[in-house]
Image (cartoon, rainbow, N blue to C red; front, side):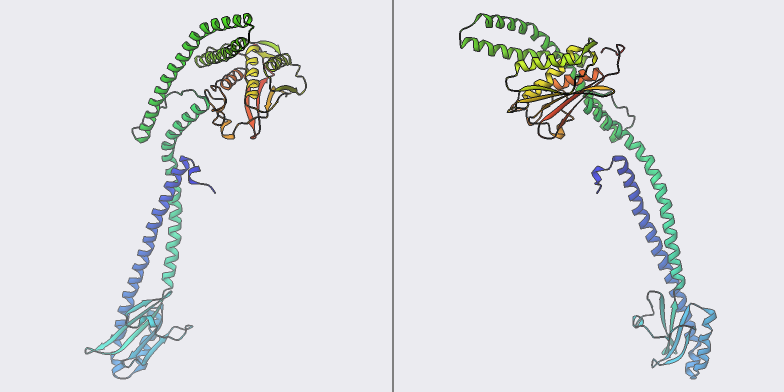
Length: 463
């Protein structure tokens, strides 16, 4: 079942206006029909009571002289005077029938209970009228009429048909007006929505959303533009700080690393040598972080350069796997799939960086396991590299966010170190090679995939 929250703003506006129109037109047409029917009934009551009074006045002499035949002849004239009257009856003051008339083909007349004490009463298809016959201020009898309301049924049916046709016409015009009106409102809102979606997907601050209105939507768009300006300014300052800090850290860090490496070669006594090696390991981590921060700074400023040339993908895979295997004491890295036997046009160092990062993550995020699988596949258009681990996996709701800058999974952020930069850099490198990168995970382990196109040439622009 479709929920209201799942319907777009555009369709909500249309539904709201059409639904409102249906209610308004329904009420108007309902009042119109009820008023018209009641007006017809009142006119019919007035005319039948007037006719009953005339019949009563003309039958006074017949009752006084006990001439029922004259009264019956008078009632027979109703056949031509008022054909909708199916029964007419005159009673004396004792309530006994003095004269009566029945339209051919109808049943005998019986005074209905609903008429007792009333001058008129309606049933489903009949009107009953009673009027006293008065002579010298004395009631000497009563005139009863039963009127068939066939015309009323026809009027009601006609009014309903007319109302239905008018309602359809009104709905069509209401829908057209709603489409035009919502187009003005929803288009402006959709501009804002699309801008937010673009920022969410790319992480890039979009240009200001243009709007010339002065209503609440315009106020919202102006507030959004102002917020984007502030975020963009803050982002620039943060990127500038990251770039400066990374450059400033690189030189002293290189010196520190050099001294510690010399100390490592000179020191042989335990546990002093162990302390030096641990220090060297932490310096290497810090060096990788500084390198990642420099890469992020270059990506944000558009200064990350690629040195494009042809290289053997199988050779790069084997070298990278061997390098990762040398530093891993817990996992065995296994390659599956046939040799690619392909020369790839790209930046060999940057593709190696992607492989090292994915292999490092596979080892880091599969504690307690001992295997990482590297699979290769070749299609008509691209090479696909798959790095599979059997670790904690990636939740479905996080798989679209995991390549964002500084994004850290909620399930691993506490007990596994990292800044959320590696996958962001990998995505940018692969995108610059016109490839794809994505993750597959079903809760037990993950497969990080990236592809490189086969059909390309040195004419690809370096960015």
